[in-house]
Length: 371
Image (cartoon, rainbow, N blue to C red):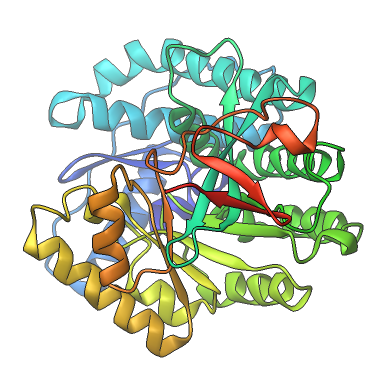
């Protein structure tokens, strides 16, 4: 925290190795000031601690293409990537040599994300989520695919956007695209519901939340049809604030799902702090469930907890009938995976045929899985 307070933007610090840190600071901050500040903090806890050494390197970095706050985030991301990619965290000489080209690559990638959002150069694909007990398609998850990005998974681009503080920009663009689909002739019926992903970082950003509220103020006609999934690749620190946003979304009639539960940061303390309607069990537990008693035990525990909390469950990575039947025995409510259908575009502009596939068909106004 002491280092962050001395850094550009208050967050431009990276751990290079077990006992080595890099700090990106303004010209007004000297190496001596950093040494004195950190030494003082260390000696508050350990009075006999030796002085902390700070080495100063001056770099002129070209970040003229982006605003100062984005430049600080680009620097922080680049420094942290350097530390992760370098053996033993790297050293000052290597950092001075590599930082500018790495930073230029980061800035270019940020500009590419901004360009993608500005031009709408992306597509949404839709994957069905099926009620295991009735075979009715409960809703479709909207999954982004970036045009001209064949060599990189969508997850990489989304994770990068989160890391550099651009998740909100991307999330709002995807939300607006999904709303457009829902209001179009191909999907404008009460029985077709759609889920849009929102990063936990977006829900933590007051500016993004303000924009989200503005969008939702115009979607009263979609309240029962528009679902949100909270995703996260990094830990959310202010869960109480995020929960306030989630409750305001739910109070408007939208269901909210907690994605990838049981993996990474989306763990039990999230479910304690965030009141949601559905929990999506991470696919790492599902794909080996037929061969792993341990995974079955975890699924049972998650389902039991969610049942007691009044929360439904969804299993992803359902690839075959055997897994679907096992999940039903374990009392999981919904399933998602290639067994029910791959992510796809609507097959036509006619609502009667757009969502039909070899596995899905209309019956009495509802879309059913044929299995």
